[in-house]
Image: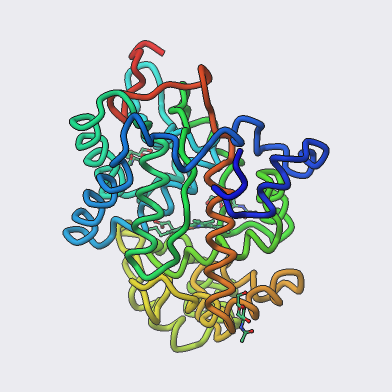
Length: 341
Ligand code: HEM
Ligand SMILES: *[C@@H]1O[C@H](CO)[C@@H](O)[C@H](O)[C@H]1NC(C)=O
Ligand SMILES: *[C@@H]1O[C@H](CO)[C@@H](O)[C@H](O)[C@H]1NC(C)=O
Ligand SMILES: CC(=O)N[C@H]1CO[C@H](CO)[C@@H](O)[C@@H]1O
C-alpha cells in the first residue's frame, strides 16, 4: 500500500506493522490492497460518474445524503464494507437490511447506489463493486452537505452473504450504556475519539420518535409529561408535541440536529452541550467524563472535527473489506450474481 494514497499516518501504521494489528483485529490485511487508483485503467471516470449521479439524486431527494451515510455505517459494522446491506430478502434468505433495526434505512440511499451502478454498467460493465460505489457516494454526499471531502481507497469486493440474524450485537443502540458503546466500537477497531468523531454524523438526518420516546414521555413513572432533566425543557416539550401521536403513526421523525438539520457541521457537538442532543446515546457523549473532552474539542473547533471525521470514515471504509476471491463484483447491487447463494 502506498502511504500517500491514504495520507493517514495511523492507518498506515496499522497496515505496515503487523505487530500492531492486535490493536484493531477487524482491519484485515486485505484492506491494505485498496488504492485510490484501483479503477485507473478499467474505469477511469468512476469517481466522476458516481458524483454526477448522486449529486442529481440529492438535489431531487434531499434525504438521500444522511440515508447513505447511515447505510454505509451499517454496512461496514455488519460483516464489513461489502454492500451486504444492499441485498434484498428472498424466499430463501432474510437479508441484513430486513433486520428490525433497518427501519428507515431509506429507499433514497439504496436508489442512489442503484442509479450509479446502472450508469457504471453502461460505461465499464462488470467492473465497479457496489461496496465501492456506496463508499464513494457517501463521501460525495457528505461533502455536498458542507462536510469534508476525503480520499476513498477502492478495490472492495461485494460480499457473498447477507443475513438479518447477523445484525444483532453489531450496531449501537440509543439505549446502550457508554461502556457498551465503547466496547462495541473497540471491537470494530475504533478508539473513543474515533467513536465521538463518527457520532458527529448525527449533525444531519432524522430519528423516529420511538428511538428517544423514553427520554420525553414518562421519564418518571406515573408522570406522563416528565422528560429527561438533562434536556433543554423547551426542546423536550417541542419533541413531546411533535411525537404526541408516535404510537399510532410510526413514520413521525424529527431532525437529529435541531439547529442546522441539513448542514454537515459541528453543530451536533454544540447542541450536546446545550441539552439539545436527541438520542440518549448522543447525550451520553457529553455526560461521560471519557468522551466529554472530545465533545468540547469538536464543539470548539470544526476543523478538528472534519479532520478526525475524515480519518475515521477512511478507517470505517476498511472494516472487514473483502478482496480477491473473497467476494465478487455484483451485476445488480441487490442480488448476488449466483442467485442461489
Ligand atoms: C454512536 C452510536 C450510534 C447510535 C446509538 C446511533 C443510532 C441511530 C438511530 C437510532 C438513528 C435513527 C434511525 C431512525 O429512527 O430512522 C440514527 C440515525 C442516523 N445515524 Fe446513527 N447511531 C450511532 C452512530 C452513527 C454513526 C457512527 C454514523 C455514521 C458515521 C451514524 C449515522 C446516522 C445518520 C446519518 C442518521 C440519520 C439517517 C437518516 O436521516 O436517514 N450514526 N442513528
Ligand atoms: C434497548 O432497546 C432494545 C430495542 O428497543 C431492547 O431490545 C433492549 O432490551 C434495550 N436494552 C436496554 C439495556 O434497555
Ligand atoms: C483547530 O483544529 C485544527 C486542526 O486540528 C488546528 O490546526 C487548529 O489550530 C485548531 N484551532 C484552534 C483555535 O485550536
Ligand atoms: C428499506 C427496507 O428494506 N425496509 C425493510 C425493513 O424491514 C422490514 C421488515 O422487518 C421490511 O418490511 C422493510 O421493507
